[in-house]
Length: 408
Ligand code: P1T
Image (tube, helix red, strand yellow):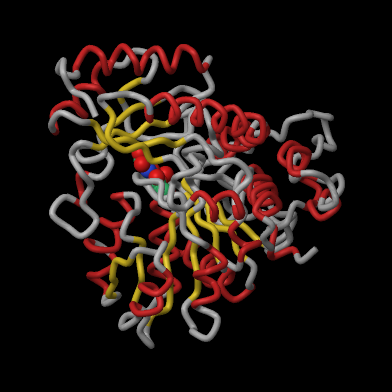
């Protein structure tokens, strides 16, 4: 194994290196890759290396770690497992999903380059492109990535990065990753897929031709709403060198405890995603039959426009469901405020169910732009509670706020 790729583990981790697990199943790798028992104490769980620096035997003679901005063994373990789960050669973990996004957009692009961004994307990703990255001479356009002809038409010679989310946030649109990769086959632009809404248990973009995978590890990977983090996974050495250099030079690193929490979350990712998906399907089916609900967005529904592509490129459909309400814009915000099991909060991907109003919360920053969302939209992050409690909670919230007489 190339030391640079997984940053040196040396004696600090010992045991079989990450590549030794490559023949095992996803669920097994999620628990073991990079997390061999500590060779000194036998500790089953990798320690939280809460240290800023490492003693050197002589000047420049060390065990692969010099300073924790550059590398930290707990972070190395996270790099190893995430690279393995996404099927990439390397991973870099960041202090947040947006820190990872900023590093990828700004350090792989140069002034004069052009970025193509999904027209339905996390509001913060749009804000970063429009209000930060654009100030450094990197122009961007929004395009519906589900429409491959539109992607082709939007490409310019100077387009260097195409940024796809799938499923998208918050409309759960499905983008055909292999289709976009095909459009880019004769073009120098590289393809990033933000895999936050699916997680590698459900979708592995590199297998479909993406060049990079981006994660807000805050979400399904962490899985417990107790940590903020991000990651980039890729294959080519040149990009790793550029990103690694800039991360060390500019410092957007996660702390060891945050890496450890994320590692702990990843161990149960596979089983959590099964329950998230089953619960989300039941919730989507309930909403579809409800008189006060206008449209339901869930790629698991057979009549979702992206269902066929989703069934092909995903394993399950993940746990995010959005819907629009009938009866005026205030209804959506009121429903979001009336649930009891679903808690009113931004973010997603934790074991607990969350509800939010994208127009006034997660996507407020795109109001008045091409990425604006409807104010009748409600977004659910369906958790792993008992499904009957989730459905009942939505039933009572809708009944409480919907004016009598709304009928399809
Ligand atoms: O919050 P942070 O870890 O910085 O990740 C940003 C991010 C990136 N990509 C996607 C698809 C995301 O959904 C997010 C963060 N999203 C929310 C906080 C939200 O509630 O949608």
